Length: 457
Ligand SMILES: Cc1cc2nc3c(=O)[nH]c(=O)nc-3n(C[C@H](O)[C@H](O)[C@H](O)COP(=O)(O)OP(=O)(O)OC[C@H]3O[C@@H](n4cnc5c(N)ncnc54)[C@H](O)[C@@H]3O)c2cc1C
Image (tube, rainbow, N blue to C red; front, side, top):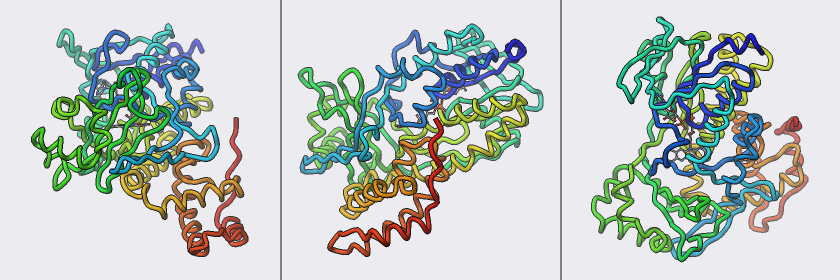
């Protein structure tokens, strides 16, 4: 422990992953310097218009528990038991996420959770916090990270002791490593953007059912809303940038009004600030980041969105970033040589990051479209039936991702593909009668799906 105290680790980005990682590394005894270009979240109000709330699921919870902050986080969470699907005519239907009572996810405010994690990091005497300090990039050859103090405008360098880049999807560290040809980066932007809107409480009551993630699926686009602890909901419109039914097709207040009245009529009275917010709030971009490798020797490591940002449709970006922190911390249980640890981290997480990137893209189609399809709903019921009967082999893919952190994302993707084929075969056999051929189900499942290793802990 005392030897580790001498070892300094610099973390750039005191967002969700950076602040959590600071807690985990501080608990191990490292001297942690945590930098962020923003002001100290303990002293400022939340920034609006940038994914105000997020869905927290089992992988994220597991990491928060490991860091010892889950109990403190609990008051920030609102349980969401399923998707509440809103049809154009105003009809609503709750599609539960799973059939077990504990198969729920939680809405959590980004600002509140970040603040809690920064507070938890600040409790450790071996953590030093530096806000309003922008990292301008790293020079791996010169072994330094470059910073600008945004209060004095002075620039300064910090040695790469190592440095962990948790500076988010637009990472400067990633860009500088790519510019110096240490890594290659591919950023794939979606041709759909997002915009956030607010559903405040109405006459002191919540505008919608609180324990659900609300979805207005409309085929090529959708509106969603997640509850906040202050009684409001934050809605997010996901819409193409160009073409018919796009952000570009809504240049005037009248266009916006007509579009919402046509597509989301039941939501219109719940968003009193629709026009003001629509034109004031930023139109955010979405995309997937592929970077390789994520580290330069034992000097620099990219983690969280900086390494592998994904589109938000599986609600897993933060959860995956938190799981990165768990993995790095677990690796440090066995090895403290940074180059080896970073290389092992890259090997362990890369297939999983690729898998969640793919599943997140696929889930956009599910949320905005197939969720309403009777075939989808039939297969969902069938999946749950198969899970009840063969719980050690068959778990719906969505459940594997959201509720089973012991199943890596890559395994969830692989098993999910096999399960889809089994479901299609059984669905066909069931035909119009809808009766499950149990014998055939057992044969297919035992033949094609090996048992899932039991949970440890
Ligand atoms: C619309 C939307 C909805 C989402 N919904 C969900 C969801 O429901 N569930 C989920 O799990 N994930 C969700 N995500 C993804 C989630 O927001 C990210 O995966 C998560 O924030 C990643 O954490 P991070 O710490 O890696 O990056 P961030 O949270 O982005 O933190 C990066 C930090 O680095 C700092 N920084 C940036 N550049 C610099 C610099 N040059 N110098 C110093 N500091 C810097 C920033 O100020 C910030 O504090 C959503 C994303 C979007 C866009």
